[in-house]
Image (cartoon, rainbow, N blue to C red):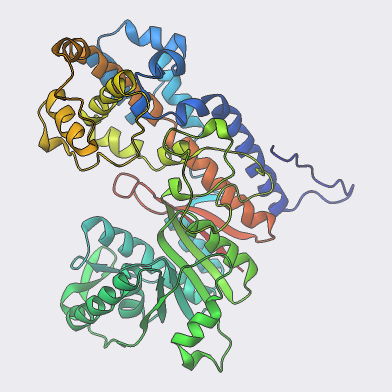
Length: 498
């Protein structure tokens, strides 16, 4: 249940700007959850059960379903693309209202608690920091990762100076992409922490190769122009530590072990993470609030489905009934007092990681495997009702391996050892195949309609984290739209200074 919030009536003084922001955030969250709550069954359904649970008739509003039935499939999909890509459309059809209402409940830049990367630069300047030029590195990382590192590293380096930090700590850094630019481009001492020893071992060797080639592969970007970097580099600034980071991890001790030269001085840390998975995101924020040695945090979250929450049994999907996290790090959602006891559900959180921006931009329909897996479920439920198929068992059946449902069924039957393909009468397969086109059309439209909720759910998760920081007394807190959502769908970061 969400907690009611009231300002204390002092009689003489209006609410502070911080109280005002908390009030706006809570109202914003109330508005989103009021819209989302009746749609959580849709968000938490599983596409595998599309036919067996009759999702089309039971989860899509009747008016919307009837309205779309008056158009042919191609017209409906084209309308969806056109409405979804036009932020200012005034389409008054049921489909237009569905798309626009969902979009109206997604976070947008509002110059109050959600700002742009350029506005973050202004905040850093106002806090006494110097905004650094971009460093561009294309080699040794994907184009997407290169873009993210180039965009984020200059802001992390700038925040490092503004917060008077002595070391940057990257939580869950894996291969250490971000600190490559921080250490070699900006001279920021950085510690990458990850729980995978093999990944860290490989990353250490990889960093040595990058260091040798740094001046050949890196460019400094000023006023849109690239220039060669000639300054010498310190090869000893990037170090690694193996640890599973939780809210209780003592980062200062870890840093002092790896950087003993800091022991005699006051260690102040900037905690960062580029796409921190699951609970690592909220745990990073909890570390920031509880450990005074952390002067600032700059976190980009990811993998919401790996968050833990106290989910009501009714929201559990078919694959979560036996779900349990490998490491119990406590509750990942919600964080704020205002949303205490509020549940989203694992499938809803998994949906939040999907990108409607990219799908619309690429006009990308789902894979036929979505249809075939749902049809396979029909056969299993009918002929082998006691068989349970765990999630992920059929992931290796990629679209390039089959041409039609029968080929998919044969491969799935072999992988799952069902022994159903060879004994199933021809009439059963013919029955399930006779309406493939209409079934495909329904599953595509269902997929697109459900996708509209993705950023609504993500907005709840992000605003909850932001509100948590405000509730804990921090005022220099920002939700930053850092990346282009088409290039990097998890595009928001949470930035805070002590």
